[in-house]
Amino acid sequence: MDTVQALVSTARGWRGAGALALLLALLLGAGGVPAGDAAGDRADQVRALVDAGDFAAAEAAITASLAQVDTRGDTRTALAFERERMRRILIDFHRSQEEVLGRLRELVPDLQDTEFSQWKQAGLLEHRVIDGRTLYFSRAVPNLFRLSPQAAARRAEQTPFSEGPMESVNAHHAAVRAQALASGTTSVLPRRVRVSQTLTLDADAVPPGETVRAWIPFPRAISGQQEDISLLDSIAGGSMPAHSMPAAAVVAPESAAQRTVYLEAPAQAGQPTEFSISYELTLFARYFGIDPEQVQPAPATAELAQHLGERPPHIVFTPALRAFSRQVVGDETDPYRIAQKLFAAVDRIPWAGAREYSTISNISDHALHAGHADCGQQTLLLMTLLRLNGIPARWQSGMVYGEDGYWNLHDWGWLYLAPYGWVPMDVTTGRFEGATDANGASLEWFYLGGLDAYRIAFNDDYGRDLQPAKRHFRSETVDSQRGEVEWSGGNLYFDQWDYGFEAQVLHDEPTTIDTTPHD
Image (cartoon, rainbow, N blue to C red; front, side):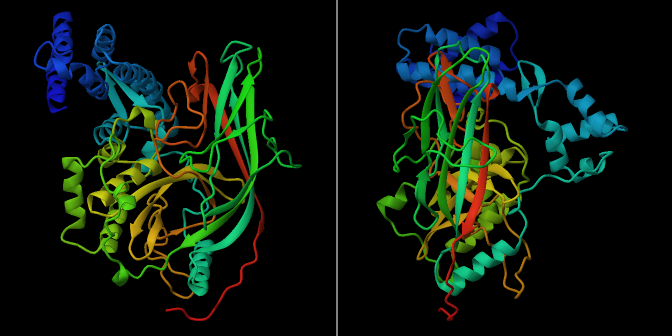
């Protein structure tokens, strides 16, 4: 890979068709890449070109490689995906500088050219150079105001940022902690919730009569977190369809790490193709009262070993990540103190809207260098850092909601702290620095060992196959929160369909609290 990156770096200064032909020869093994390795290396080589913004060279390399008879089936698939990845990147990065300037001047009427240049130079206006063109991220302008207080202050109309109900410390967090410590249990405040989810394909996205295949995310039972899950045939009330539509639904087994309900329907001319499911489940808040003095190194077991190592492409112990870890952790050896330091360091990375995960070749590395990250990017970065320091870590994600109709996609994780076992972490909701409950007890580290009851987990891992399997590329290669759609002609990407979610708390279950002090 170092050789490939060196070639790409050199090629950036080349001009003309002869230079492109020479680059292709090098990439295809005719000029230094061992012949036996050429077929297997081609996808990595093209991936480096795509990451470098050299789409023309990448496309030429893909075409040339696919014409090679020795290109294996898995390499062909990987090369085809790189072609699709370029298409997706250009959906995310499609705004010209003139468009971005125009939008900014609508919001900051007296915008100065020097201000724009400073924001761009500082990386606050996300952009990429692709085949010599500077293209801006579709969310570059709203992200700017999240990333720069100075830019936000320049807006003619000051509007608050939208936040979820659990993103600030509140009475629910205090109640979760109090109930858990008083009862001596880690699962508290159960509530029965009814959920409806929809997926709607645009009219005429596929020819009429063609079968549309859809996967809608669906929770699996997790003891003490979400239990008693039942898919509903029909219910009354609510603003969304309250039954599975079409009626024939295939529910993935409980063992599926990314569980879904699979549905099929024929497309009809001029009409959207609609899918929906409704279900009920009991959700719990979680809280582990961790005593740092009791935490020990994780035991060496086969089960934990799978949550410790690298897992390319998104969990890789790169030199930059190792250096960052050393800077943050220092000479600390206690697992809980290490986790706190890493949690705080990743929490300091500002949140901003992210490009599609399928377009990023290494998400943890991206989060480390981009200057901002969303919840999944922060979680993968923290998981990588924890694993690097010998602390097992794994993924979880799904949907968060509020009783006022709020809902949003969200990713978080779990880390293993002996003797407590697996405990939750939500680095994006993050640290409530200095926060306490009414009695002065600290709530600062609530989300390093606790979870609120306003979330549903659809995924207990990332990047796992759906059941039944997709025949074509997934729109989301990492997570499964919005759904997936395809037909015989290929995958249907996010720009061709929409999704919806509604959660209604039916009632809180009565909880008996033991107020006897516990050691």
